[in-house]
Length: 205
Image 1 (cartoon, helix red, strand yellow):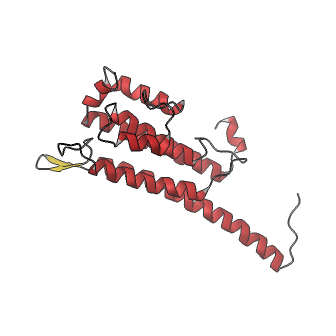
Image 2 (cartoon, helix red, strand yellow):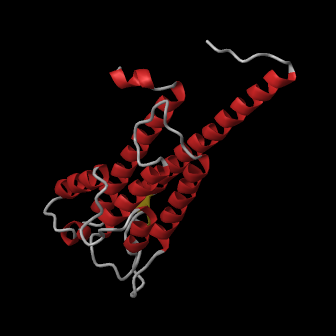
């Protein structure tokens, strides 16, 4: 237990753990994509996958877009990453855009406290954006008809849908938090109306 948990409600703690798990899913996607697309490591100017991974994590934690994408954020970076004309590290851009988009929907925070107010609609929208990003990742191709990035695979050599599972977990957690936010506000409103209905004074201490 850390001292700052004293400033967190149960719900704050739940959202904090969900964000932690979301970032871990994103980093697993990053590693999987680099392994499936090793050419992107060199395009990013890195020598090893470990170097590329570490650089990506630092970019996300410092809110610094990949080189060449300065001034862009969240969905704008995702759009560039999936543009056939983009010649940079497509994995790095995609992962940064995905993480930044989710963080933006949570007011650019990964830990949450009593004073934080989140918008359920923004988080719901982030879940839909993750679904769109996953679909585009599997659908976008270059001018020669080849996928911009290799991800899920169903072939004679085997089946790999681990990417789909990670995206599904991201969507599930985001939808859960959005629903909990709506329910939390609804219960507050219902309790207030019940107090008015039964002429019950609200506690002051």
